[in-house]
Image (cartoon, rainbow, N blue to C red; front, top):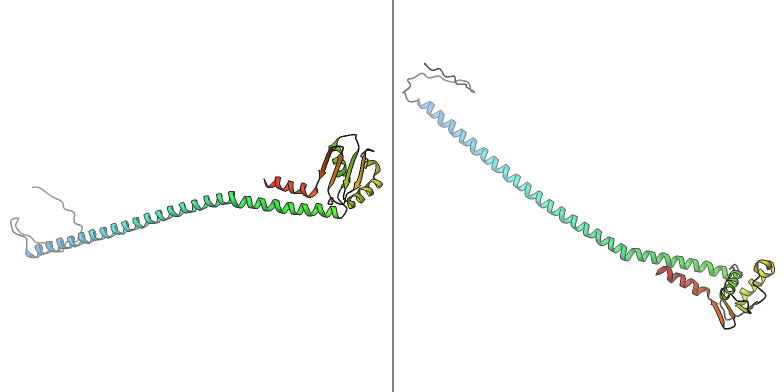
Length: 209
């Protein structure tokens, strides 16, 4: 005799005893059909749900891919804009700022120097000594200044004779054709002309270039 143990997961609702060769009762056959139908419906619903989940996942993946492409495109555009802005800054904006700063500094410096000249505060004695030193000669030297600058020179000589001495061979005289701050020195065939405004302008050109 063979014994078989069957584990049941559902409670036993009915027990029918019959011969082994007897066909199953109709109610049991109907029950099996209902169970099979329920299992088939459940399987179809599971398949349907899985299909819906798969479609939803596919849709999300597609949207995610589109978003990634949009972000990559935006990053590329931002990088291009940053590169363009950097080039624009280096080639256009920065040089323009530098030129503006130089022009402003030049204008301020010019006004300060010219104000010193017209207020009799410009160091005329240094200018005379410089042009005399450039000639570098013991021969007679004639230095010409604007009449107002000559007056400043004479006042300085009177109060600082020892410090202002440039030599007995140097004669300083007025020339109304010169602008204030200008100086001209001549010894024989050699002549030196110092123009204040030209010196300031040359300095501006050097800074700009």
